[in-house]
Image 1 (cartoon, rainbow, N blue to C red):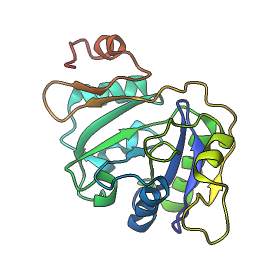
Image 2 (tube, rainbow, N blue to C red; image 1 turned 90 degrees about the vertical axis):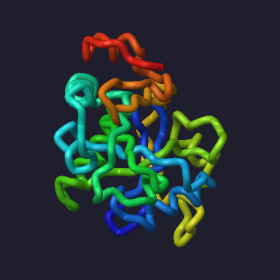
Image 3 (cartoon, rainbow, N blue to C red; image 1 turned 180 degrees about the vertical axis):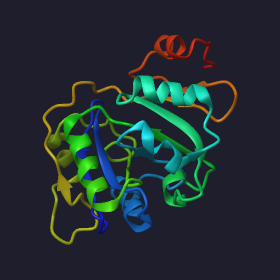
Image 4 (cartoon, one colour; image 1 turned 90 degrees about the horizontal axis):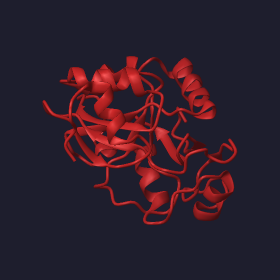
Length: 205
């Protein structure tokens, strides 16, 4: 992946289609493989909350509380992007979605990338399915939707990591954290009530 490869990998929700988050060409290829509109941002998968400041700025205290309490887990926090985040990841916008997956294969992949690429290494990944289709929960589902890896084929993943069936199948909950008050942008695996209990305040929907 450090050289620009695309890897499909399991998370606790669904399989993701990942590229090195700092590799503009690889991220652009993810969009091509999925036939995803380039204006639709990707989620950056981190190894831990300690990487937050490498990808976001002006981080509210409640966002740090959510990250510390609910990561790893199916919660995506949308924050003001750090200037180092490439435009291809954010669709040219000024925010970035961040989360830490709770799956041993995903975390092992991140560990290996960080060991080789440094502490600011992360994976930009949407779900591993053609745009508009249901996200896959198995490696075979990835292959059925996107095709099996083929040498020198720009239109398929380079590697599909088979981690068995994803236990969740429900996408992450997405929460905007760009202001004084959090707001749910997409309901998913983490209930709104859990978020409110964690930060001890109401969340806008």
